[in-house]
Image 1 (cartoon, helix red, strand yellow):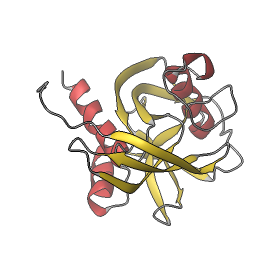
Image 2 (cartoon, rainbow, N blue to C red):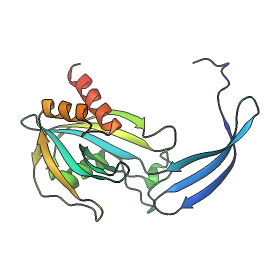
Image 3 (tube, rainbow, N blue to C red):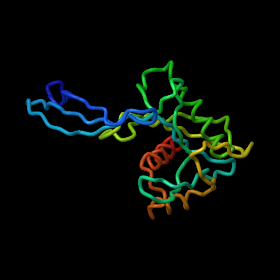
Image 4 (cartoon, rainbow, N blue to C red):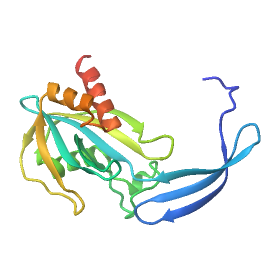
Length: 198
């Protein structure tokens, strides 16, 4: 990294347009390194979350199908969900460990709640920004191998999803056709491949 690069922006002002228990949506004015200022830049805070590349004892990928209101259609993806916070908010500083559920515990809980599967074979892969352009939350990516079905689903009140098992060829076909569109889930699959081939 070049120490002489002056690329950092300075936030001059910030207006919290929506700041409730679900989201902190902000409008900011920034000063660029050359002194110019510009607004509006919009950003938001949401809670960190986990993504789990889970496979059963036969090597099938455990996926969920659900409606995604951002793109207004049903998609296929890996099990994922928010890391819970004890302060009751849906967002907050990720360094505030006292108010935040452990990421691995969240991954195990989400897999069980959404699919009814559990695993004794977990591997952490990466923590990556969810959307570095507009959001300050992060995705924690895990692999869970040799999962076994131990219960039914235990869904949140806003979750409506079905569990499906797919082989790798089917996953690849869905990615190519746009049916498996979540970018961080595709990244998770590629990272899982890399880990498996070490």
